[in-house]
Length: 89
Image (cartoon, rainbow, N blue to C red; front, side):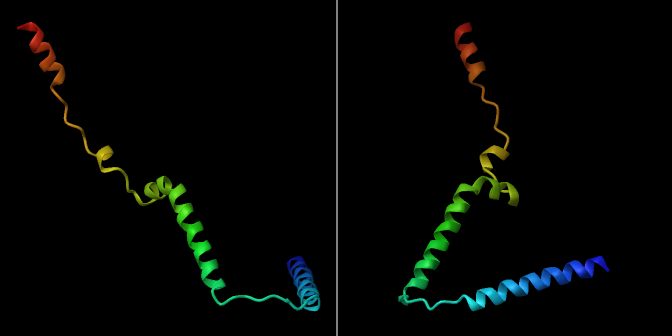
């Protein structure tokens, strides 16, 4: 029963906030250009692209992608053997 009382109190509080916000509405004396929506879209897209750029390493790790050079085994070079062979002769 306590759960229902708590839920009722939260619902009543939410209702009071909605009524207050509806009563406090003032007219907005401003002009919104039709191109403003595209500006907001551009800002949102830029934020998304920036976040992906900053978090690109974590995104690669999440999808299991990585640098292919890191995952392949590097063949052993014989440069050390060649250097020692040149000094022995």
